[in-house]
Length: 314
Image 1 (cartoon, helix red, strand yellow):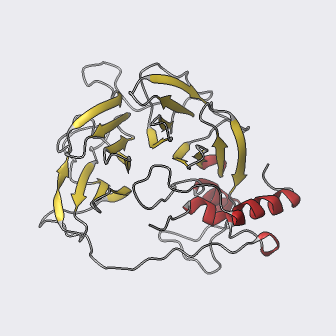
Image 2 (cartoon, helix red, strand yellow; image 1 turned 90 degrees about the vertical axis):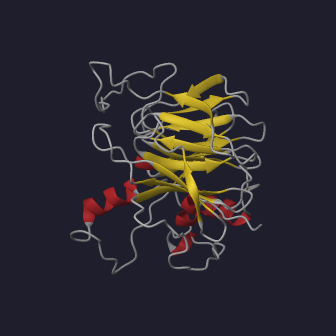
């Protein structure tokens, strides 16, 4: 199956003409209303979509579970569809760990991993939809101090056994698990193939190896770990021990004439903030191989070398 390169990297290739290389074309077919929802069921925001080896599609949506306070109504529902878009069922209906959907991934054994930003939990299901592992823990309703996380500056120290608004998950060729954590914490956590804690790295900041909202994570066949450092508008690359290897920034303005959905189209400083907040949101892959990309394509190496020559990322 043809691999799809990182969407974030493709944005880089929209750099100035003096640095631009030819990017591969992403093939797609638009099929309106492909996913067939049962009557009365609707999608909300959809932050995560994944496909298993049988072609079944998993959609993590912020909808249809607004039945209790997670500081505001809960919004997380994991739906499964067949290869032809037919509705198969709901995975983890009413699960304790549901609060605010963020992303869903499928590993090489077709296990389903749901990352819930609101409950601070990462949940591994087997292919049949039964809970296998749980990482992190939501704040307990019985605790007197339960409430939204504070965005302290400087941030509070990490707490063993807990995450604070995690965002994504990936695996290396040895089966180790890496979790980006996240909106409050600024780190990557590593577990071994048995689900045992190994280490974490990173802290809030703008320097190499520091993060300002690690929002996405992916790993190639060479076990390079790519972390979408969203609010720093860059992607950082590490080895499996957390050693910083390199990084590249993404500064791609909207196409001329682009209209904002709500309100005026930003310009000047406001536009710069939009670009910064839009970088490193998500990595897109095709297929179920957790390491699907192989070595970096030659056009990217050339692009990076050209950007360095122009005083760009290092």
